[in-house]
Length: 438
Ligand SMILES: [Zn+2]
Image 1 (cartoon, protein in one colour):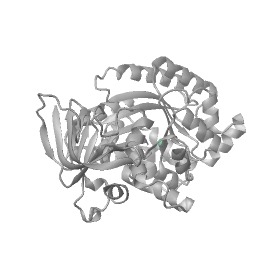
Image 2 (cartoon, helix red, strand yellow; image 1 turned 135 degrees about the vertical axis):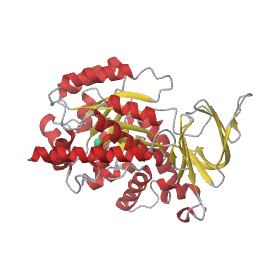
Image 3 (spheres, protein in one colour; image 1 turned 90 degrees about the horizontal axis):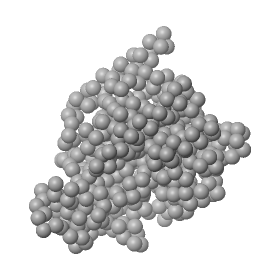
Image 4 (cartoon, helix red, strand yellow; image 1 turned 60 degrees about the vertical axis):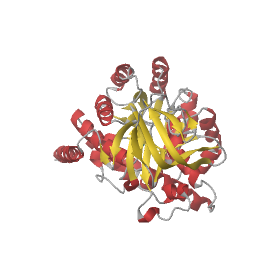
């Protein structure tokens, strides 16, 4: 399939500022960007569908580097609680009732929300991964998926076998839209011997790791008490950080030494600013991590811990809190934030050939309208995208060169059906938890 997106403001890489704006056309063939402005070549038989993007910005798709998509069924279910009470008293009892059907439609709701917000790739850790993969593929999104592994849970050994089967089952996609990783939940839910087995299996399968790490002060205190080490040092010593890609969600409470390990080991850190603030977990050293060369992307975490799965908000919240905390308006400028939301996220989750508008890159591209009141006037388009844009401005979304959203509407699924089925199943889940409570 050939596509030419014409006349837009292209957000392209630039050596000094990381990103810059260039007016021109973007040409796509068979899922790959072949020309950007005057860069690259279109094949002689190029016969594209032409898309008018005048008055719009054309940029790489956003990446959600950490989420639990099926958790959308629990949006608004348990707010204003600290992490461990939130998990133990509210989330885990509800998750015990999640079926394959819940996961299919809950994930569909999140994929719908994410695609319409301009997210083209997400990294997920949750349950019933076959359903997650199936609906993600059906709706035309890219994902890195893992089954959440709780080392102390009954069935932890079987979950390792299930993960291996998933990796086998989903590894033959010629377009490489769905990848499987291993998802040890956290160092406080997986003992060292289990984590070593996870590392061994990941190496054997040639897959990466997705894990929560250094999320709260309590976690750091407990890991130091149990093992005499901080969480990053602990998983590093167990051999996990050497596996690529290693997606570490949160990294809120990390030392300068741990930041060095994260950078050296090319760990992809999913910075979840809103989840960390909403759960009262703390503020990650985002500026220090980016300054030290850590591969940082933004993550929404689950809809139950953030309310909204929107990377525009995550980018803004992540940046503003750092400027305020450091009393320094110059750190994390607009271009840096946009880079982390796109290319940074793609590298963090292991898609090194995505997240930028250059010939040869995967054609994950979004078209963002610049004509609304909050996007007027256009003194600086990078600033508008970083500080003013929202998901309502996303007009078209292409994943692997195929339209997933056009004129703000999902292309490959029925939006009303997804919303209705998800709402019914969320009500069913709530009823089951109430029955448990007697
Ligand atoms: Zn999470």
